[in-house]
Length: 491
Image (tube, rainbow, N blue to C red; front, side, top):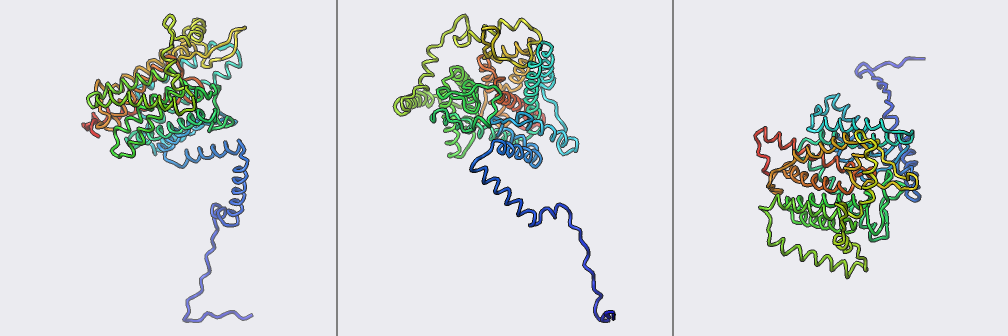
């Protein structure tokens, strides 16, 4: 066979270079992507018609994993704020604990790779260590395998709260990041209030179904005294009272009229939700917070508008409840409960049984406590009642050591966030104004914990650590700005 002869004026032919396609590219060819897309679409369509709880939880888990791995760490931590009030349970644990665990691992890896700044010390680091250590020490009082197992779960839960503080304190370093966290809290508050309103006006309707919401032993709310996704009316009332001041501060600081209208409407809704809970303690905490907040900014208050506006708004609200709310007088019943409160030997009538029971058992293990898990049930024929006081809870579970460690954290942050005897929530920088705001909110929290407990359920503990972290963060910001010579009180 004759060989082909190359033309002398033509360039030699070049063979096409061989190209081995990488596996990633092969997986993205239409022959692979289209069948997968069809199968995923069929699955999503089937779940839309008849959703499977496992499929929904799987989707939530995948979304959390993608958030942790894909987004910057500060945004991933902010994403946790959006979802912490609706945890669910998967076969390896509570999604809140898992989310925080993934965030902590990611943060440590980023620090090791020098993609995140090195950890900075907070003013309560050693106190948090003692706080966790006293919980471990309380294991000495455990007597059964069941108590040991549940105490380990409770210890992990408390550790997740401390881990959230660590993440927030080390990832929120600028006012832009601080604003992101505050905005997330405002959106979460709107969601929590939505669940409460639906529950109240639609005969106990639950926006988040029971099969998804993992309450961790928390009380299920009742339609006549709503608890929303927080599950307990006292916690909802306290949360609404504290977030009311955040909404007011945002209304004071904004210059956009429709923004101010939205924040004012949100603040009014917070008050309405407090009345829906029919919780006297929450109402008292709200009054305490409002009085202190007003005292701090008294030089900028228009007292004539306050004296005229408060009675008018109160009259309109009571009239609306009486004539329009279909005869439902729960909100008005709150005022009746306040007026009918009875104190016996310095104890409110609704707390006598619970406080008498727990104070009788505290001396059994006075110094190290009975262990981090509080077991409900019966002893003989006597029912065990929830303590209804964070102070008594810590004294029972962690003893004098445990209560002292927690009190030190609380009082230290109250001291660090103290703004002086005057505050300007409009003209101060966001960090300085938030520091003064959080000081008021931590004080409200401390008062509220006399007759409620953040340890109840598996959600409200994070609320405490979020406020604690905001206090430490804003203290650090204002301290650094003062050291640099900047004026922290200029917006």
